[in-house]
Length: 471
Ligand code: ADP
View (cartoon, rainbow, N blue to C red):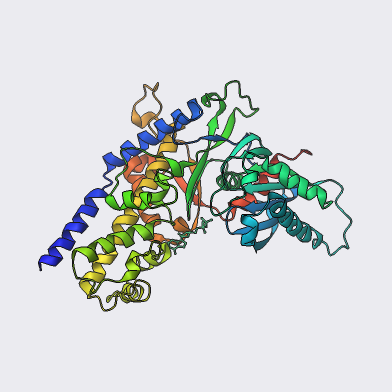
């Protein structure tokens, strides 16, 4: 009995540590908006990098013709061809080919990597009309999604700041990314121009805007998390004199690195960060994204097993970082069988903890719930932070003397993508609930989260079209 009491103590401490009351969330909203300001005011002014993208016009629907995209951001890369019909939401056809990146190329030379990509693209293009069609009259155009931090110098050029996700080609850091690809294409005699170099969130925003012109921001919540949004150029103070015909520009926030003392942090978060390869980095991401949620749960279970014998003899599996993947955690959380058989199965098969009583299985579900609810509610606060920064949170701006009921809230769409949001139902529901909690019903009903699919690829092709040298 005493042991169970100790476990309950650990649970209570977790719940308190993860508390996301509405007032706490509103503090996170404010902190996000403040950090956005700071990141736009000066280079290095915030943990939010607020990177300029030079994307000043988003696809409208008038784009027409065939465009290509190359999506490099993880263990796979994809080549795409999209045929656009010249009206909103008129993607007449799209073809995708996926290929794994041979691991040795991720740490080899940039020439080898880009030659490999160029060769895959060439084969994809050559398959086009089986050689029976005449070659295109004009040069083909390509959108290149490169999901690593890049300091852009124009919509189609930029310098690699650093590699992430297992890539390590040191000579490439500080080099022009699009130019390296263009060189590889030219060398193979492939007549194609890199028309846009974009981050995956920007692709998602482009696709969202193509379907719905009220789309003002995009969020990705998958293995990692990031967001971008449409900002007024005169608010981008760190780049004075920046002029665009539209008066706006998409800003890539790199919001995974957001930090605020208002974030509800537990000892598990502190340990996870300290033991990670990038301590003090990506603090927001470590509380929210799919890479980490399962491991936070594992750490709580480990602690409980150290405090008591409710899990039987110690399992060495429990000490293995990242052994409990987030999809498995979600499966336990969403187990709706009366006996929680899925929880029992995963505890047994993955963590090698057999024969746990129902009471303990229920406890596991509760832990998953606390961790996911916090993640989803913090993501919602981040989204409202963006809305606040651009005056779409219903607060009506500082100068407004109107009463709340006078303010006509504009329809506001946020494009959203990523496996955690799209495949984890309870995460999604908690996120939606928190949006309403923070904004209130009246405002929240004007904020629409719209799932896009393959935005990182298709969106890049759309941006190649809207930045085509022929239009
Ligand atoms: P990525 O972010 O790796 O480019 P995705 O957007 O498809 O790719 O996200 C995949 C991530 O989403 C996985 O790493 C996992 O953390 C999370 N995920 C996928 N499916 C589920 C699921 N059913 N439940 C919870 N999380 C999931």
